[in-house]
Length: 72
Image (tube, rainbow, N blue to C red; front, side):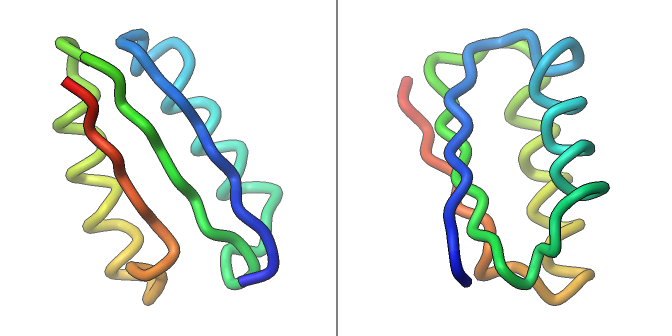
């Protein structure tokens, strides 16, 4: 990994987080990136989305490239 992308988030999963992550997948070589997502007191579907994102990263062989930080 050559660089890290840090995304802090609080709710608005569908409006901001999903499009952001989708854009990163579309325009970034994931072999070079560590994606760190900090969920700060989220009460929407963020937890579910990040769990599915973990599975997606694992299926692509990039499980070590995703770090999720939960701050209740």
